[in-house]
Each structure stands twice: as C-alpha cells, then as structure tokens.
Length: 257
Length: 257
Image (cartoon, rainbow over all chains, first blue to last red; front, top):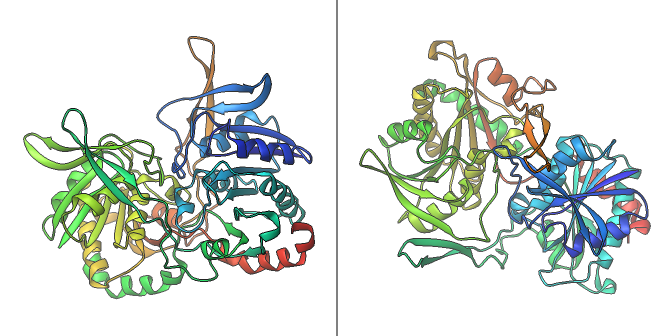
C-alpha cells in the first residue's frame, strides 16, 4: 500500500510528522508538501510559473519532497510524477485549526483531498480544532483508523473531511457523519497607511464563527465535542434550485435570448 | 442600484471593460479587480500579508480599484470597505476561457461569485469559451440581461455561473440550465532542469477536456453551442452518500472510536 501525505502548514509542520509516524505503520508513505505555509490558498494551482521541488531533510532524516507551490499542486505532482506507482490514498493534515463550514472552501488542507478525488484517488483531510501548538497524537491515531475504514469500504469519488475536537481523549463524545455547515468566520479589514502614505488593508478578526448554524452541521457537532466526518467532492451545483431556475429561465426566455 | 465588478484576468482585461460598458447602463458599477492576472487561484484569500490597493486609470479615465490580491480578496474588500454602501449584485468576468466542469473549482472568476454569496450578495460569473482575443460584445449584452433576471427573481444564496460559446450570435442555440459536470483538463507535467541543475516541473497540456461527460452537464451543453447557466454555492458535501457513510461509520464504530 502506498499513501501520499500532504498538508497546508508546510513540510516541517508537527501535524504532518505525527501523521507520518502513525500511517507509516500500515503503508509506504510518500510526503509531498508545500515548502512554506499555504493556509487559505483554497484550490489554487500553479500554472504561470514552474514548481521547484527539493528533497527535504530534518535532523539528517529524509522528510519527503518540498514543493514551492500549493497543496493541490503537491497532490497533482505527487500522483503524476513523484509517487513511482499507484497511490491508494491521499491523506492531508493534520491541520492546525478546524476546517468546518465555509472555511472548507478556503482550506488548502481540504483542497488537497478534493484534488486527489479529481484524480481518481480516495482521500482523507484531517484537522485538529486548535491553533495552539497542540498534541496531535490522538488525531494521528484516528487518521490511521479512518484510513483503514476508507480503504476497507473502497469509497470512490469522495474526500472524507475529518475534524477532531481539541479535548482530552476521554472527553471526546463520539464520531458523527454530518454535512458541511454554513458557519463562517466573522471578518473585518484593518485599514492602515504605509510609510509612503499608501492605503492598505489587512484581513483581521477571523477567529469567531458566526452563529447561524444548523445542529446537524460539522461546526455544531465539533463544538459539542464530536469528531466530525463529512463526505465532500468537487461539485458546487446547487441541485435544490436547479429545476426552479430552469423553469424561470424558460419562462423568461424572450427577455434573455 | 450598485454592482461590484471583478474578474481574475486583471483590472486591465478587455472582458471586464466590455462588462463595465454594458452594466453601467443599469447600475452604478464599482470595479475592484486584481492588479495582475489571477487565473487558477481558486478560492484563495490573502491573510498573511496586507492587500495594497490603488486607484487604476487607463487613458486618463478612472477604472476602479486595483488590488494586489485574489478575486475573492477583491470581493471581500469591495463589499466590506470600498463600496460605500450596499451592493445589489457582484458580477465577475468576462473570463477569457470557459469555466465548466471541474475547472469551476480552480477558477478565480467563479470563486469571486461564490465569495459574494458567502457575504450574502447574489452574484453572476460569466465566461467566454475562447482563449483568443475574442469579441466580448455579445457576452456583455447577455450579462446585462442575466443580471436583470437575477435581480427580478430576487435569487438568494446562489451564484449563477454562465458560459457563452465562442460562436457568432446567430449560431448560438439557446440558453440551458445545467449542472456542473465532471469534465476536467487532461494535464501533465513537463520535467525540466534549471541552470543550476535543479529539477523543476511545469503544469502543461491543460487544453483538452476529458470526455467522460454526461449530456446534461455544463461542458456538454457549451460544446453543443448553448449558453450554460448553473446555480452554484459553497457547499461541497456529497449529500448522495451522507446516509450510507453514516450507516457504515455506525456499524464500524468499535474499530473507529
């Protein structure tokens, strides 16, 4: 078995090291991760410049390939060029901070998993709900169990997005399968002036979730102390309005075409 | 009425100028667009560095605000800071090249529209299926009609993704509402060696769509000469497997938790 491991916190991140330690018990693990932190890059890919790749080491040990690109770049390059054979599973994480609600769209960690599915490889994104330098041990153990679960059931065409509460193991309430919610960060911009009197803006205040959250969503379940599991993929179609929009376009066709 | 206009080809792009010319007949149009081309940045946002903003001009005329950031940054900043009042509609485009199938995920143009919906503003992304320096006149006229359509029906919580075939007006077959398909670009990497003998990779061959395409998808309909209209939003949940995954997790709970 061959797993491809990546993240968006960069190749030297502690969460990735914990993931490697656990998953390499079951599979050959190839690490292809961003050279530097890529949080909030979403599903960006690099097309207008080349991707520099180097073999990264830490304390004399090979870590894997460091790519001067995004998490989605790492997955494309890992699967297409660097893996040396078929990849059975892509695992992305362990992210520092939860990826729930609308943040899933901004997340490099989750986008890496989505990219894997686009390329036909099942995947797992895993995040720990803590921005502090937390202990990834439990999350890594859960990732190993969830990886085995995904492979055992031969899931095709889904990325599994997992979030782990930052609680002592004994206080975690269970595992629930929930939808991606609509929770979003409350953002504002700080307006500043540079040394040459030019105005600039800096996105700030992204730490609190908006409260408009249904109880069966990832954000709610995570807040209540559950491990959340959400199947996602790459289709943004709003199916629930597809027919209504179609009918209205037909009715209004004369004004449109 | 106040519209916010953006794109991913950059503030000086011809497609944006055509859009401005048509839409400013109906509304006050504020342009907030990337300083430089941002194709394939997906839903990336800028959080680790400030956003420089300047008022751009061309031939002495004010064009709007040029932002050294992504399309999603432009929408956030435009709505939150620069608009000077409520925005009724965000329009993103006219993109040089179609945004159908899996490309919707990589598209800065579409991500700008999705960001608007996240912020509670209806939106329209519009793309012309040509990478040459095409004529945007018809696409801009259609954008004006579709903007009126969206506002007339008070659509909430959807971004409307529109693709226009690169055909003479008389050869366009009609307007259809279709889902986002699974068409993807056939990609490969070119492996090269730099002047210092380092290996690098460049994403290439992204011009042909894979053929695995259902007939009611955006890519198929566009190829057949139709204008495609797809309602999208920001939820990646794969609802069709939510229950099955939930059942399997419950069955396997002992091995997971």
